[in-house]
Amino acid sequence: MSETIKTDVLIIGAGPVGLFAVFELGLLDIKAHLVDILDKVGGQCAELYPEKPIYDIPGIPYITGHGLTDALMEQIKPFKPTFHLNEMVTTIEKIGEPGFRIGTDRGQVFEAKVVVIGAGGGSFQPKRPPIPGIEPYEGKSVHYAVRKMDAFRDKRLLIVGGGDSALDWTLNLHPIAKRLTLVHRRDEFRGAPDSVNKMRALVASGGMDLKIGQVSALEGGDGQLAAASIKGKDNAVERIEIDTMLPFFGLTMKLGPVAEWGLKMEGELIPVDTAAFETNIPGIFAVGDINTYPGKLKLILSGFHEAALMAQKAYHYVYPDKKLVFQYTTSSTSLQKKLGVA
Ligand SMILES: Cc1cc2nc3c(=O)[nH]c(=O)nc-3n(C[C@H](O)[C@H](O)[C@H](O)COP(=O)(O)OP(=O)(O)OC[C@H]3O[C@@H](n4cnc5c(N)ncnc54)[C@H](O)[C@@H]3O)c2cc1C
Image (cartoon, rainbow, N blue to C red; front, side, top):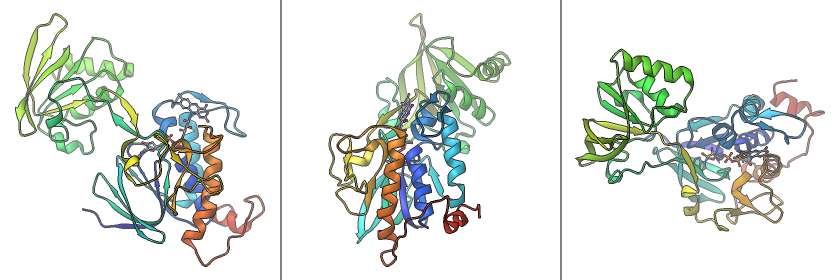
């Protein structure tokens, strides 16, 4: 297990609002670490609509989800936030007044004076394929993400899916796998044409196998796969021996562990006050799509406003003996120094 990381603020979720929270906290000399279950920052903007235009960010007539994420990353650069991606916050425990111990599914422990929940619509989680009896293999020989490529070295791999993730991992893992088979239900792929062409060239040269059909059954014991049955369109079943299966069926948003943190909830949302966007537990704030209050709009601009007010109150927890003086970035040399522009 890694050493406990101590920080002023732990932000759960690196969506647009979690990212902007780094900026507002940073202006007040508050350091932040961010944890996100995705392998990238930007939340819904990066995962659900990277190429789609957003027209209602104040002062920016047009920007894509990807563009906004990049711009936010540029804006928070001076504050050097630390990101922990591919990691889900699972536990929050109160250890002080205020003070929290936060744990992740990868065994990382943080101690923070303040927790900011920017968990959006919840954690993005992989969709489970409809294969009977898959559960005992999950996390052992069925994996929904590739955290370390080397874990798949010299294995007989079965990759399932027809999108970019399935194709990208097919191309990345085939050089180290003992044998790689890609299964997709039809002979058309949603992934980038270049990846499809590369995959087809590998199949033609005998470097990997492509099967058109669906995985209908699994064999193995104690969580270790031994074989999979693939049912073709003609209902013929082919059995292939495998060590590991990687299904890539896309992501879905689920609330996840947020409901288990002892916070007052309204359905799948966290009620907050509108003065500081603090939850019923002092020192834990909720900003962005995850919170609710009278008149709440699930818009990025609302989340940005919430982050600014959250930071003002968080300051009093982080620096209880200091007085906070309100300043403009336009005229404050002290803020400009923090931004590296003065
Ligand atoms: C198709 C589409 C178009 C949209 N267009 C617009 C628009 O034009 N204008 C606009 O203002 N809004 C738009 N929105 C809404 C906007 O994207 C959301 O309001 C915004 O993304 C909310 O930001 P957030 O940071 O609160 O949450 P999110 O973007 O949802 O990010 C939350 C992050 O938290 C992570 N997370 C959750 N739980 C955990 C956990 N336990 N551990 C670790 N990480 C966790 C998630 O993986 C996620 O990355 C659109 C949404 C969609 C789907």
